[in-house]
Length: 130
Ligand code: MN
Image 1: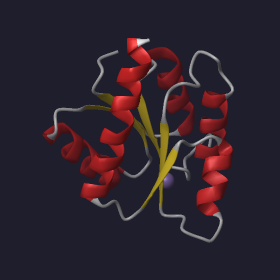
Image 2 (image 1 turned 135 degrees about the horizontal axis):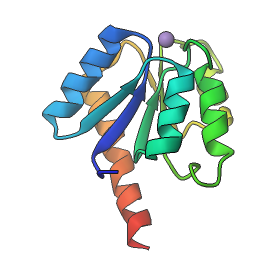
Image 3 (image 1 turned 120 degrees about the vertical axis):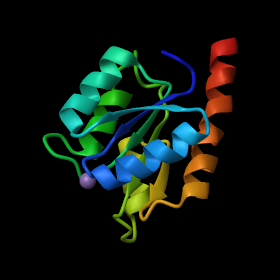
């Protein structure tokens, strides 16, 4: 899969549109899934370089999705960034404990999103050089 491709698993079309516009403007290709089940299937089939993951999702929630990604030796190297409105004390720790590599809170801040996405690409480049 092309290096600048990002998979975004999110049931809210407004968030998907915002992230799609933001990332495409910077040369990323965004592929999208609307629920946890199809999102997990796309991770398995496409092995995208980076996954953005909503936590509150139909069918399979984001905690379960990241758990299954990180339990799979073929997939666990893929960075997963949680993006969620859930901002209660301890949530960040809960998402990281579930296997998320990082966390962004909604409402999505465009600059913050781009910084976070860019942060995970050099790490991938290093992996591919090995
Ligand atoms: Mn949601």
